Each structure stands twice: as C-alpha cells, then as structure tokens.
Image (cartoon, rainbow over all chains, first blue to last red; front, side, top):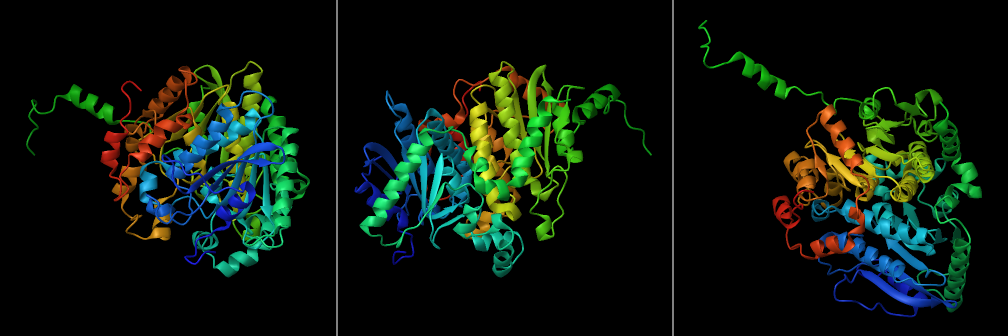
Length: 276
Length: 297
C-alpha cells in the first residue's frame, strides 16, 4: 500500500513485467496503463487499471473500474485484435488489481453496465479470435471490476498471497447484504467454498489456471519477476493449443469436485434439450 | 340522486375509453408465466423444470431454502414461428439472483442454441431479466457464471439475436445487466429498470448524498425504462401489457441481427463519456439531450 492507502501492486507489476512506464495518451484516462512488451520472443499487450487520485470521475479515484476505464480497455483490446494481419495472434495480458466497479450516481446515469459489457465484449472477442488473453491477479479482483477487466481471459493466474482476493463483493458489504457479521461470514466460508475470500479456496473452484508462489509480492526480486514471466509464457502456449471458450474452467480437475452441480446441470440440459 | 345528463357520458365512448385502460399485466406474472407468455401457443417446453430437482447445493448449508428450478426457467419453443429459447429469472426466489445451478442452466442453454444455430436451425435467446445479480450466498460461483454467460451470449450473437427484457418489479441489476449490454435488442417498460449498482449499494458505499435509495423518482429517472429508451440504450419501450411485449419481441426478432451491436460501438460511447461534465451529478434530462436516440431507431 502507498502512504495514501491506494494499492500500488498493479502499477508495480505492470512496470516490472513490461520494463516500461505507462505511455499516457491524451485521449485516455491516466488510470489505464497500456504497454506493448516482449514476453519471451513474442510481443504482448499489457493492460492494467490503477488508482488516479485526480480522476475526472470521483468514484474511481481509488482504482475502481469506471466508465472511462472500461471504454479505454475496450479500445486497447480491440486495437490488438483489429491490427492482426498474419502469424500467431498477439497475447493480451490483463494485470489485475481492482477493488471494484465504480459505485457512483454519475456512473449509473451514464450506464456503467453498458461500459462493462463493452470491455467484456472486446476481451472475449479477442479470445475467440485466437489471441491468448491471460489474466494475472496481483491484488484484488472484485465484482463488476473483474467482469470488466480480466474475467474473460483464457487463463487466469493469481499470486498465492493474502493480499490477493477474487470475489463477488467485498467482505463488509457482503456481510451487510446477507445480514451476517464478518465473523459469521468467515466461519461459513470455511465450509462453503464459494464464499471464501482466501485465494487458496478460490483455487479449489477450478477456475484458476495456476496459483503462483512469489516470495515477496510487494517487493519482488528479479527471480520472482522472471518466474512470473515464465508462467505467463507457459499459459500463453497452453491457451494457443486449446479451445478458445471458457470450458476449461468447469472441465478442470478441481471443478470435478467443487462444481459438481454445474457439471450435473450441464449434463441434464444437454440430455433434455433435444428429447421431448 | 340526480340523473346523469346524457350529454356528459356517451355510453359507447365511455366503454371504449375503459377498454383502452384494460391491459393484461405482464409484470403481475411470475417468471414461468412470463416465459410461456412470450412463446407461440402450444410450442413451449420447459427444460430442467422443477420436477428435475436441480437445486443449489450451497443454500441448504446456510439455512436458506433452495428451489427445485433454482429460480431460473428455461423454455424452448417458437416465437413468431422461429426457434427460440426464453430464459427467465424468477423475481420471487432470492431476488432473481444468479447461482451456480441457474448459471449453468443458462450457459448450457445458450451453448445448445448456438450449436443448433450453427447446424442450420437459428435459435435466438430471450432473457427476462428480473434480477439483483450474483446470488451472494453462492458468491464466487455466481460471479464466475456471469462471466461464462457473457462469453456464451457473445458466441450465440454471431448466429442469432439476443433479446433482453426488463419488464419490471425487481429490475435488472448487478452482473446480469452486462447481458443487456451485450444484447442485440433491449425491450423495457416504464416500470422496468436497468443498471449495474443498485441504489442501496451506492448509498452504502458512498452515502446518501451520492444516492438516496429511498428517492424512487431519482431511481427511475436514472435506471427506468423511459430514460434508457430516450438515451438509446433500450430499443423498444412498451406498456406493461402481455400482447404489447409479445409483439415487441416478435418485431425485433423479425428484424434479425443488427448490423452492429451496441457493445461494439466503443468509439461512440467513449466520446459521449468524454463530453460529460463530471464536476456535478449528471442530470438525467440533460443526458437525454446529449444521448438522443436516432430518429427511427
């Protein structure tokens, strides 16, 4: 955390992986980092959302994903899929540390649901076209923020670190909405895995491709950075050789136990669809 | 009692007037009735209905009563003579929320509609979105299902139109509203609402100054069907009436796939957002001028 309590993980890892500072362009918000950098011998596009304390929209200043962020992401992703001419399609790496979507009246008025859909569309379209879309969760990946930035990837990697959280809603709000105390929620999450805020439990759902061990996430050594790069390259190679849909998430070994209901439902739907 | 002068109430016109007020409310129907109401008579067949007893494995563990259809009704049939699948969220069960089972039902149905469409039997999908979004007692599996449904919607959208309806009562909020963003057509009534963050959630996060969740006029001015239609985010606005909704669905399906989907118009929306004055709250009426829907669309 930086002194003003804003997470710096996203920017930090973006800069470590790309060996570049962001190249801000005049028509896009400073909260969206974009760089093209080599991963092994291939050029990849890296994208990251970071806090901008001076952002035009007040409700995104702590790193939330808002309207401008979503449309900028969509633009940058589409640039990659549109510019493809021949050869292997360029990978897109989403470096994710988003505390949520923007909770604001301005955002609702200007249809943030639509902005989120536009970014998800761009990411999913790139994936279906054959661009390996790899998400690296370095911090928080919450709710609509993650749906907008990262959840449409072919492969999701996350650091095995207590600061890494993938969830539908932050803990205090989830407790409030479900009329529980945070302690009750924590205790329930020990048996009800999808409720858990622990990334190790999330890994049990089978949605993650890999949980990465990094010695020091906030201040990594060169060997940690190299290790992460290697795993990103491996994920890209894996994605290139497999279906471009999201089936890997429920066909994974972990999903066989934790998502039994998903698999049963799918099987039943396929059986009944054609039978009268 | 004085006799009513004949001249003030002409009987036939009074009846006509009364008739014009009479409607068959769509909103008063439950999810299953809504789904069947859209399908051509006699062609509907529910898939994975309550008798299949596919229910959430997570709710019982939290002392919440599950439901045998997991609050999601899937009906295959014809609409206007063409193949379609209707996907209805049941507003009365867990606020129309999306759990693991309902998510898997929807995702698999979309995949099958896509398979059939690719095999020469175009099958469109019609969503009845009365939903608060991800079901929090199934948190991460609900959110994962939203991402999977988005992907399946985009896949089917290459082959057949996707229609989203927000008719009203619960409205469409949370992650499921992304489906409306991805849809080929959005149909709303003035009672319908479409947004990402519900008013209560915004108020909780940023206080009553940001959003007064008890201010119903404000909520509808922002998320309501009339506003979404006036700003070009919904394609059709109809009254809460079964036949009007049926006609609207048939009309948009008949027009086929749009040349460009709304969620592909990145530049247009990017420019629109860039022009917004963010110094103060955005007045819904000002947005109607700035984002005026194109004539005839």
